[in-house]
Length: 87
Image 1 (cartoon, one colour):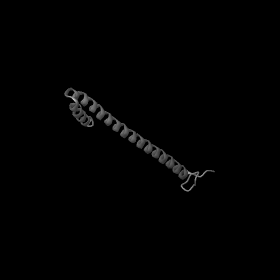
Image 2: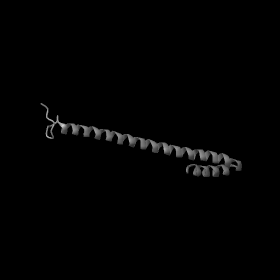
Image 3: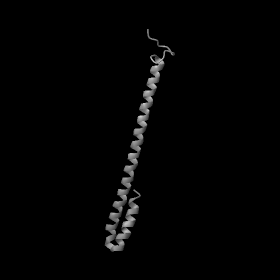
């Protein structure tokens, strides 16, 4: 006959509760690891976006500054890159 008391051992309710707790902790650990991976991916995507904005700003600034000659291109590129990195 099965025992279902507190001291029933591995086959009782205590053993079942311990098994459920271990499964829950494993699921929580997996969820935490997945969230950390998503956070790292989001940070990398954000850094790439900022770098792309700075590069686009530099290009557009240099193009606009080219109307004023080579020095205008240089100044426009610097200003455009600085402004592009803000967004």
